[in-house]
Length: 304
Image (spheres, rainbow, N blue to C red):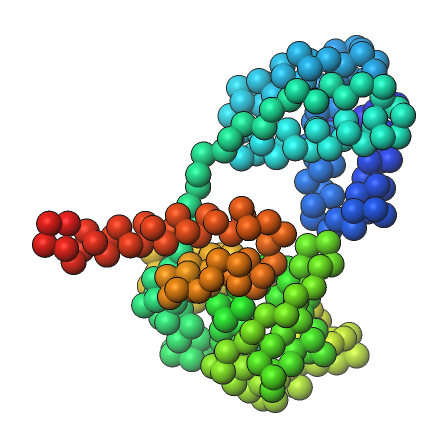
């Protein structure tokens, strides 16, 4: 994308600083806001109007262009959310006198049920590192990583940033730092605890060096494992386990939540373990649970 001109560029930088200093947003989230709003502000520049003269009709015309460009409904909804936050900020800072997005309504996104593994598929995936022939050099790390992802439902960014000092494995808990640096305690089951401790004792000690810090999961250089490396590990062992679904580390988060609810776990407890600020985000897994129940009925009921 081409660079923004003033004053649009100044307004955008002020907003990004606000997200950093007051909202404590992650770099990844800020990059998303920057990309979406740069596209929006370039469109406003093309209209040749001062930002104070932008109307609701102008914004709706931009949103129509997003639809015409083929953006998915979820991406359009994300753009609308960024635009509304941006205009609200400009009003708060007295840069704008009127919020043109006040009557801009967020379309209701179509329900998208995430990919979830069956119990059998999960067990095959978790067993894959120790059954692969020839065995992978870092199979202990990979086994511990997969077990911990499924045991805790953490996001991949939370997992790769997990410090050893925040793993209270003897007590069966891990302290997880999520979005906006919000922290939560998540239970860690006995199996995941055993594999993480074995990895720490038998492999991590050999990988660690002065660059390692206290990060739990390290790469071959002894530095923090990247998100992309974690993604590659999951994809590699899904192939080894002959899982046909296209999965990622986030699939294990979805699976963690779904299996808990299928087992009768309380929705609020699952919300707390996932680190969702709103229970609405957690409720999507009740739809998955209903799909599971429907499939069971279809398979086993005489008139299914």
